[in-house]
Image 1 (tube, rainbow, N blue to C red):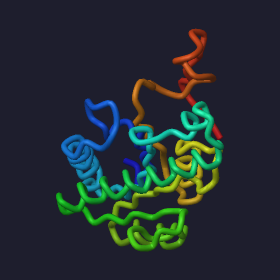
Image 2 (cartoon, rainbow, N blue to C red; image 1 turned 120 degrees about the vertical axis):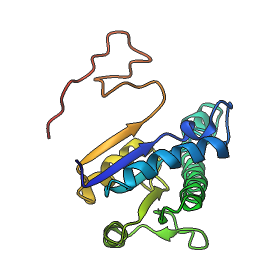
Image 3 (spheres, helix red, strand yellow; image 1 turned 90 degrees about the vertical axis):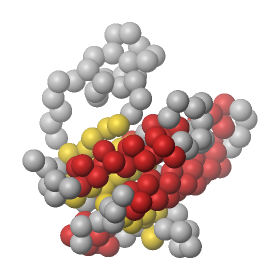
Image 4 (cartoon, helix red, strand yellow; image 1 turned 90 degrees about the horizontal axis):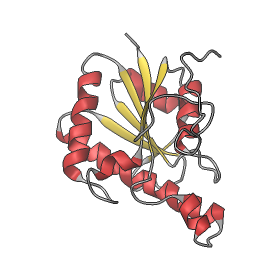
Length: 183
């Protein structure tokens, strides 16, 4: 069994059957699944995306400055983090939302040592705001958090992806899925 995991949760997972937004029933179902892992004694960190609300790349394609569009996506991850926190706490799972973007009225600043302390105190920690830098995905943020927090594994909860590939399997039919990855 793993002691500390980082779960990368796609923002798209939070929309349920809708085309966009946050579906509270869906979020509650996800929270219930996370609670099952938490109750095993596993330290759970979650990096949440915002694909259900906004994608920086989409903004760029529509003529926006890419950095500005990415910052909007980072704000979306905070909204999703707060929705997930609400669902987890409604089922009695102690939770903290941390963000790399200063927004102290609703979330704590991300400080590595504080995140580790939250794990030690038995809290689920939701990491929002991505990496805090434009041009990086929340997948990158998940890898970064996992590395700096000494996670045993990264679990990717994404729509339509079965594993890790050498290139995007939705765009390239010859994409090869890796059976094993080493450091």
